[in-house]
Amino acid sequence: MHSLRSHAAGRRVLLGAINTPYLSHRQLPPSKLCNAIKSNHSRTFAITTTPWKEQDHTEKARDYVVEFLSNQPPKYHPKSKAIVPNVPSRNAKRGKRARAVHKTPEMKTIVAYCVAEEYDISKVAELLEDDHYELDPHHTGLGDEIIHVQVGNMPDLDGPGDVFVFSSGTIVAWNTAEETIDRLRKRMLQAATNPHPKEVDSLKYREEPSTHSSKFVGDTLYLGTGQRDMHPNEHHPVSVETSNELSASIDSPKRDLALVKIAFSYGIARSTKISVLESSFESYFERIRSIPVELQKAYRVPFTRSSILRLTGELLGIRAQLNLYSSELTDSLPDLFWDSEYDLGLERYYDSAGRTLDVNVRIATLNNKMDYAQEIATVAREILSERHGLRLEWAIIILIMIEVALEMNRLWQEHAERNDPDNLEALLKGHFELER
Image (cartoon, rainbow, N blue to C red; front, side, top):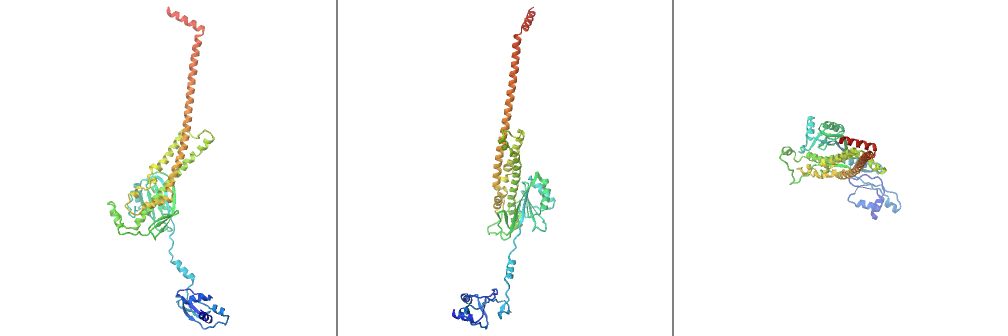
């Protein structure tokens, strides 16, 4: 260490490491200098012969300058009078690293519209074919249950859009311009049963090319668009009816991605359909909300028996749409996934959409609310029925009183006639005349 200090005190030592940035004049403690010289990552490039002023021994041991050099083409450095490399700046290197980072995929939108009680799928297919849309472009083989078409997009949207039409009266559009959705929605009204004001739900999603797995993070869907790894023993079963269509695309990533989108779309369409029933129930409940308040004030119901019967029928209709008519709303797994011939785990994506959108919780909550509304309607109907029965009882009582009054009047008249002498003499004369 003593020889090292003397060497550093009398000479200007120029040290550097390959591919290290240039460091201007800097004083280091002797331990740092020793480590720098002994390090495998450092080497001595040049030593100047400029002596330093005689100073205290401690100061001489610390008075040196270490400059790190690289193997870049050298240039003359006027301050140190030594040959130093031309090293790029940190900002330049940082810029290169920033340019090397992959661009984050932009967020896209999924929009679901429920505009009718149901769609005639065959009629929808005819209408779209008349408009020159290609049905089932990726040959999923599900055209009998779900209509899938691809549409062109505006310049500001990346790639084509996918539109899925479900028999429940719902349209789910991925990355599609609003003008295109409105045009298709109006066109398909011809195939709609019991159209109603549209109910709209929307979600954000991002495509992830680095993976084939998809998942929800919060309310955002991360859609895996990477190619699926095929195991040696893995194969896709092909039915006889669809073998011609699927043989050319048995390993098609586009087809697999379309099936994944169908699974998510089915779950989103289910949520939108429930939103329609929730809106219908809220509108219904606003009309009966005042019944408990009126009952608190007085024994009076601000409805007639006929209006209560209509409200009860409307409530039963909403409950039937939720639990009976639309089996896909309450089924844990629709028949589409039971009958699917693809081993892609589509049921997981369907369940994931349901959990993210709280479908099962909303169904249970809506049923509980309808139970409460049914109880209110039942109480109102019982009160009105009791009031109607009371009126009938009073009517019967009044009729009986009238009958009693009439009978008493008759008896009184008979009694008066028997006690009247004129009437008795007339009766006797009449009797004698008959005997003659």
